[in-house]
Length: 168
Image (cartoon, rainbow, N blue to C red; front, side, top):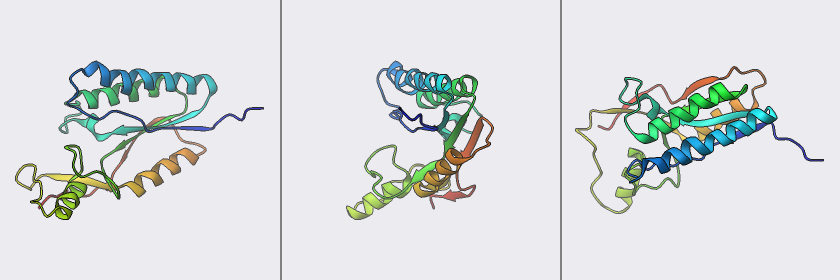
């Protein structure tokens, strides 16, 4: 007898906004996610979907790149398709072993990487911009809490610290 799972933690995505073909990102982040959500609906399994604050764009609620759009489309499909669906919109996640040499690195990992290489710290802008930083352990805890919750309405939750941190 095969035991059915109770929760799917969907954490896979492509985040490279420099892809030459935006259809590739839409395929991986939206089309394949739809397949997962359809299976979850068919088997009445809860989905905890790793979404992104990129869905908010520049604060106007409109994604400003194909990554944000692909995550938002998948999120909206999941909310409509699955009876038990929760999207967690992660903000700027940082933590150990995060690569610091990528243009998508958080400032924390980028600065640690540069400091270890004895190189100047990367600065995007004048340093007054702020970010809501969240440690990966807190993201994992949020996933576990939502995954274990018996009664939880299908919706979107922000996963951040609620503290704006300036690069300065």
